[in-house]
Image 1 (cartoon, helix red, strand yellow):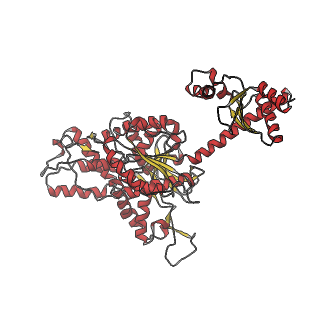
Image 2 (tube, one colour; image 1 turned 90 degrees about the vertical axis):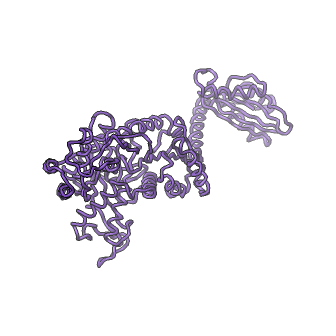
Image 3 (spheres, one colour; image 1 turned 90 degrees about the horizontal axis):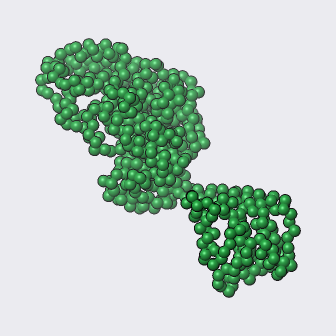
Length: 599
């Protein structure tokens, strides 16, 4: 057997095995290799086996400062110690007497192998030095190509590492069967799922692991749990970020916004440190989705281009409402565009929406469609009931449960890996680069298409202009959420138009003395939303304020008895109602100091 330091090794067998190993770019190994090939071709029982090593690997014994290189040095050292040999130069050649047993017999290096061939077989080599160098470089190129091919095979064999955060959330339970069905990544891609959550959820996660294993999915290699923060996202290829649960007490909207920062900072650090360099991060949920996405981008800048927010949930809710109105199937409705804050102030754009397979006087083939706005003749229904219903769903998250969240995430992942349907518009929350006049630096839902493993913003769409007032309303909240969360702004001030401010001032000037006057104020809420401003839905702030525990006094005389802090929150609540088309409730008086909210 011959081995060369850093060169390809060949195992030669003829009544015994000959192994030669050497540097891939070693000219002496090249000459040894050709001589061995000649002997194998002309001698029926002469067999060889070649093993090549990169030059830096072969010469690793000279480098002691790097663990990886020391390991490579141990490879040659172990071979020599096992057989009690002493050899350092390239190539190294030995014989293995397979038919007799026993340890290998060291022949030596290049000179010893030439002497052996000339003495036993009367064969020698007359290769020139120039030719030796040419062949050595060819060997190195062939070795590198072989390594690349092996690496490619490993990627086919190694499963796709999928991590799910807050795995105790209902969305995770519904997401796992979809991921293991093969519909998302394909039936030829094996996946390994890791459920990440805190220690308190460990028992539940164990039962979820057993239930997942019971699926016996052909694409599921393994499923495991992780509760140790330092091990999170190890070699992750896909990370699904779900709504996090926390027992931290928050008293104000500002506290709620800032409470998102520590976890996003931690996730960003762990993703940068542990995840695969091509990791894809997808953020889902029903609260502060855009904010969490932009924070993850801030704290994981290396993979910021691979972090997106799911908007298909809101899109699905809008399609379902429209389908019930038209008495058709939601999947027949295409190209609903969601602009803005996915879980807050957003604008549902129906100008590009089309309906397929609609039963009417006009029929056509399966690919025939009609504009949705031409099929709904009741424009007041769109302006009022449709907007109000969607706002109610978005603001409360009432129907955005585990099934819808899981399906939205899975569909977005499927599009990301395999492309969206040709010609179809998909809504996606991504970092704005100034498209459509949207300010840079915020995560904003906009129309895209998926192709070739990425997305393309559809900036060439016609008739998609949004009024300045609606755009300002949507972007103002997103900018303020980011500034407040990062501590650059102390208080969150909901956007209000001049009309709203005038009407608000007029309403606040009215004293509240009894129940009949409370009804009068309640009725005035209905007039605070101009028709042209009814499309954006209620923001996360309104959802937050609706969840704060409240104490209502039987006969409040005025708002003055509350302290300044409570007054500011009460006013904020009135402001949020002012741009909602929901039927407003009477003003509520909230004492924040007595019943803290747990999110």
